[in-house]
Length: 333
Image (cartoon, rainbow, N blue to C red; front, side, top):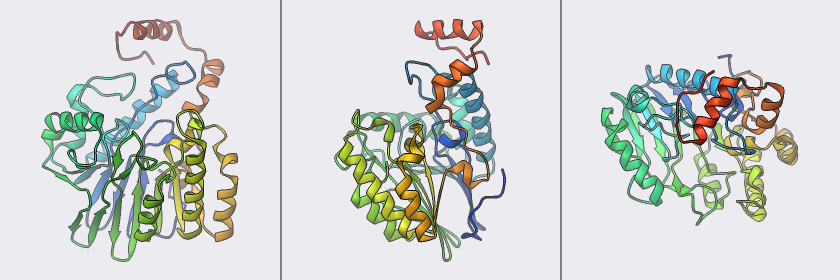
């Protein structure tokens, strides 16, 4: 990948590997310090249906390519983290070519084998669906790990590198149905990178305060789900997300904004005020693709255009019919 645009970190190297701005649902990130190398949230997914359409072949080609990137990165890491148990944030052990691009247990084994795996507590502050997934992970892909430890609220030290996990925070709004996630700060001497997946803005004031208290130089955060406005998410909660995000851009020098927010094709215009605040503050707000010097490659939000501009083959049409009949086979690309 190209050299990133951020010069605020000299000892900590942050490399986004998969994200919405790369064409998939993910926030998987490689972090390297002089002491250790870790892989954050090694999951990747596609939305099975959006705009009444399955993923376009270009989306399948992209997840195939980026899954390989994640697997290659896993080969040189000692530590892997799981912030929560949605499949775009950890890799399951079942065969699934529609959503997760996984080949039974083999894909998960390649990621977690012989690793120190630091996970969201599978028993405390967790909803029923994620508790079930956490249990399944520990029995399947997780059994290849060197060690597995619940990380909520704990600090792990590797020479001069510290991994500081927050207690579980809301996946979005306080009291919501989506459960909880853990955030992690990677601290090397005086430098701090904070990874805040799926906080949806942040939507929670409490989460906002935790982020500010960590005093990161670089923050990677899951932004507000604008595409769900007044549909699955109350408009007032999205307004709170935007207010909290504006607080962050005033104080934090560089913010990588990713995930839910980029599923709205008009995301940039809807965040015009926040971009203006960042500029006035002399701070940088950008996507993961922009951070590594690449062009944004949005696919899910453009799915209707993909099917119109790049018609699918007869073979792919037949595959979609098989998919509707619950025959999940690897798609023809």
